[in-house]
Image (tube, rainbow, N blue to C red; front, side, top):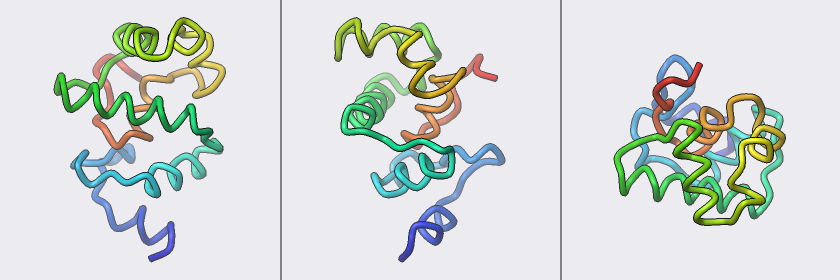
Length: 110
C-alpha cells in the first residue's frame, strides 16, 4: 500500500483529523507531515508520540497551554515553550500536532 492509499484509507473529518485515534500509524503521520510541508525529525516524532500518550491518559487533545506544560515536563524548557513549537509547527502548534498524532482537533484551536 503506498502512502497516498494509506492516507486515503483512514477515515477523517472534513479538516483531515482522524476519526479513530487508534488507527494512527507512524507512516500515516509522516505522510500527513509531508502533505503539510514538514519533514519530521526524531525529536518531532517523540513529541507526537508523547502527545498521543497524553491523549490516551487524559482523553484530551491539549490546547496550547496544557501542551506546552506537558512538553516542558517531558522534554525540558527548550522544547516546552510556545516559541519553539510555533517555529517548528506553525502558528497553531497544538492543532498541527493533534493532526499529526491522529487526535481530534483541540478545543479552542482555530
